[in-house]
Length: 347
Ligand code: NAP
Ligand code: ZN
Ligand code: ZN
Image (cartoon, rainbow, N blue to C red; front, side):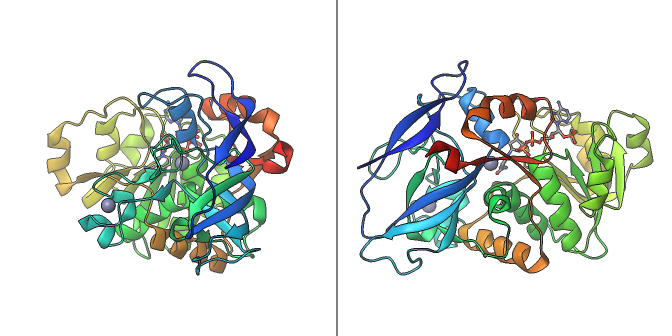
């Protein structure tokens, strides 16, 4: 066992604190990663605050992890000491179900092993990336191209893949009109990736306060959802709407924005239900869908795509003692556009 420095939530209501956690001894196919940066995803906040259900406290969250390999198990072939690597939202899956066999580990029928708050193969509770080291089985470790700025690479492991996957699946590209709802961590990556894929991108944000940045990320249009006229102007407009909002929204108003055969995909995960009036789906033969992160192969494809196109998250790097303040700012939509913890501050 390796005892390493970490940040953990003691309960749903207390601030996160510095602590130590244990990492398992290296198995033959495991990789030991010295973490350099860890992104703060809104899912970390939903989880530690108990929004989504019971939590095994104390818990270390973080599933946007980048670092270097410092040791490999005896049978490891995919990674070598010194490689720059990443770990996202899952660290294992059953490897036997129909979805795993088809390469969709994120949709493992037995539930993939999440990077934190899940029961690992050895029966221990997984602990996430707000820590100095992590041990992960080699095929759930991604290669992070050196051309991606180091501190900006971490958010690709969740915000990047979670937007890339539905954009690729629903074929965002030339001739397609795509709207991204919410310009936070996921949203700003959705805009950059959809624009790089060739789609005509519109940002739907609560206000116009981030318009300049949104357009610089590649959006062609930018509207405030706080203005009811937006929903009139944009009725029947989009082939694809990617919703990244962490809170409930008025589904009727957003579904009406879809043109014929358009799809509204929620990646945002509010704890409350999103009620739908089915007649809104009848119009324009609309679809309502959800999407969960992406597979390991797709995550590698996204990392390589971002490296080739020169796309990277816009991050604000913070120290370990600023995480609680960062959480409050994320909750107030005051993030431009992803907080990343410099793990050197934990050593
Ligand atoms: P984030 O950085 O906080 O971004 C969410 C954005 O939504 C905010 O910046 C804000 O954008 C908008 N927003 C927030 N509250 C709102 C409200 N009450 N009404 C309208 N708009 C609001 O969060 P994130 O890290 O991108 O995560 C977004 C959501 O995706 C979370 O629920 C997270 O758990 C979920 N998620 C899902 C997956 C998946 O696999 N499906 C993966 C990762 C995250 P504006 O200021 O521009 O309006
Ligand atoms: Zn996440
Ligand atoms: Zn499976």
